[in-house]
Image (tube, rainbow, N blue to C red):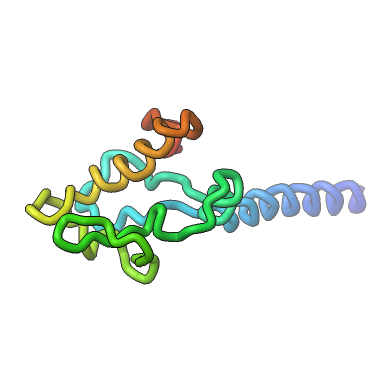
Length: 124
């Protein structure tokens, strides 16, 4: 009886820990800049995504604009998106939510690959 109980405890512990370790691998788009997000952060496994999409150049997503023009060989990967894209639209850049959606969904629509519906990225 003791062995059976010990076996059950070990199996339950392994099951619970396997679920926790799987969540450690999950990466999401940081939504802490939004005051009251209506949806959870978008699930986004950066390296896996770039491998699957064949993206080698960081500036495909991490872009820099100067005077309204894309700077081809520059990357903003060392900055948060919210440094340029504010919660409200300004003259320089679209607001943060529009920028995320335009960058991600726009690419998915153009390439005809990847999620475009809300619940496909914002997983509860």
